[in-house]
Figure 1 (cartoon, one colour):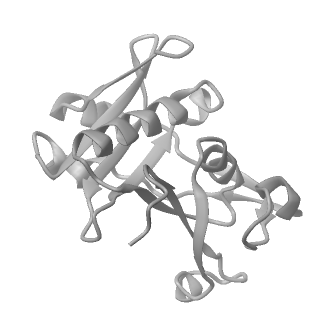
Figure 2: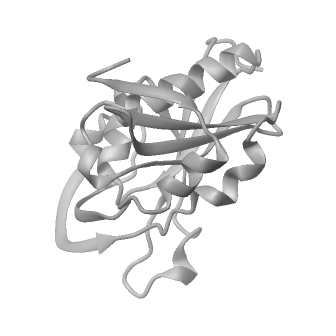
Length: 183
């Protein structure tokens, strides 16, 4: 537990409570997606704009009591503050399907605690590591992943192209390997 943060397995009732949280954020910087350099070295300022992923934790209800995945909720002082969905991916890695923290609880340790629980789940499943995807506009997430030992392993400049009127976001694929052995 960090800073009065507790991570528990989700229940149907808690999923309902997560629906009312605010997952929006303001984009003020973006990350130039280049390998082999720290995230902070690739940041540049952009005109502020609101980003909303329209997170729907209910879409992961199939992970409740599922041996091939898990759904966790972060509680801050007993109050739902965010969630993480993780599942067994086809390639022997755990896939973080979604991670979202309410705006009021960001920088409180919720994201870190949720990710640590996903890492523990993946290790318990004897998987090779953890992978996830975010965008170059989600700088706070990129900084968190880097801090937790994830490395940028791939980029896709086309994935979001059809969804945006402004220049498309870049998808960033992050990996945390439990062993340096690569097959």
